Length: 178
Image (cartoon, rainbow, N blue to C red; front, side, top):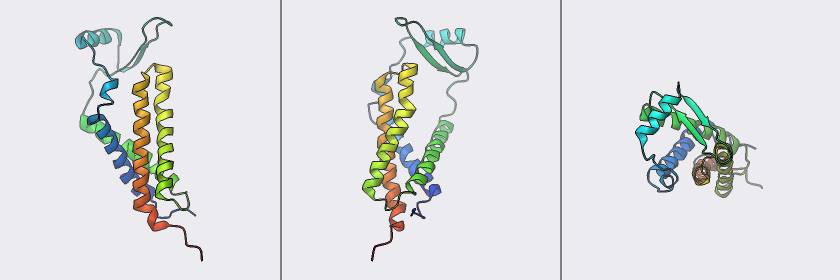
């Protein structure tokens, strides 16, 4: 039996907002992400070198050898663009993920808060491991940087799943046995 009122559309909004809020809090308030990102020492020289070697916006790789420097750059000649547009798009992406996740949660009969938290935690681990760790393996992103994404995803989807369970699943509990 599925939870007929665990609506993926409602879950997209509620879950997406929670995951987005956790991400914003984690990046803007907690110190862990800033500890994994280092500023360039001479930003103008870096920009000049990239502009000289990159004819257009895109992803560039300087593969190097086993003991030579490795460089992976995402470059946009136009700049970062509107912060508001990036925030709106980021929220839309999280809401899309929450839509899919709510649909899956809605297929679980007798969903409890504890179950929802556990399922959400493992879903977040899957999102993080499959979304971030390939960048560590293939593109040499530092492990602490990628690992923070895994931690963020696990926390965010645990929180979202708990809220989804409390908001929607309670009204759709399994029938009581007589």
